[in-house]
Length: 473
Image (tube, rainbow, N blue to C red):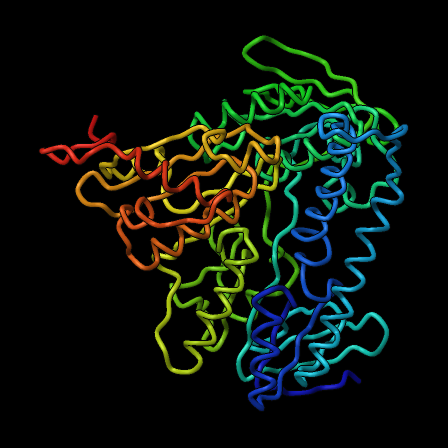
């Protein structure tokens, strides 16, 4: 007979939002359990954010070694050992998992490893990996179940057993020719990293530009970067079919504006988007509705359609960033305490860890035009920031959007070294509702990358008498 237990707080999934909610509620004296099917701490420390940036750092070291003479340093022959790259990543992940286990123990939250499936309202059946099946009820239930790679339904693609980011992070060899499906964030980061490890890389992007959500000038700079890195890019490419098996050799048939083409590679990586992990959970038995894409339907407080059931992170349609999932935890926790925090009007930054980094906070020009928001734009080449001369990293630019009707900062796009740190300065100013002139007139440390904000905002055009801006052109 299945064991049955009841908890005040029952969390399905131990991702960023789930684990912080568990630790916080358990420390507050609430009887709390987390059911996790395998990745203790969620995707970020195991198979996503941190492992990928670990690999990217190794690739950066490889690139610097190849450039050693430029810095006046003589080295011997350089050899990439992917087993060593993988071991460094695994060591980091093991340490992070151990840290998470310690946090669970210290908080008093119970971590249950197994697969959960709803059998009734706020009640799940959990099949433990090593142990009996048990039934668990929660006074309040929280879903933090994440997403997974979406594999397109192209003929032969699934049969080719393509890599996803999971397998790519576990490679113990350098692919001779890696074909990447998708020119979004994941595809772009892996393309540059694997090229630096010595792979020939081809990126197939269905749309007309890389990084489809960014401005065209940003996409053009990324394309130039890839061209200079000897990464082949085929835009507006429709995948027709795939033959072979990834790792042993594949043929990829595509159609573009230049006609049909056959590419031969050793490996194929799918990076075309994500889909929610909502199948097979019995959410209908819990009264939890999904939207048309299979994500959990929530309101601005992250409440589902079932009373006492909440959803957090990207399974609820939140942006695919760990820092957003952490904020989802804060939204839910504040509401549990009687507050009224919501997900509306959040200022969400992001950073793409290419080299140089691409980061943005607030609106870009494309979004401002779509919303008919008049704006002024300032842009400077990054080599105007003298810190780049000391680094020998002079590729990129800074671009700021300022309201045409006031001095409010609308957004910043940074394509430069340490871009993720630079946008944090502007995000802070935006949260504080500071005018752009505050950054223009600030005394910023020399020589730093953030110092570039002074000449950038000094380049903002004066406000016109009519208040018209680019969106009204």
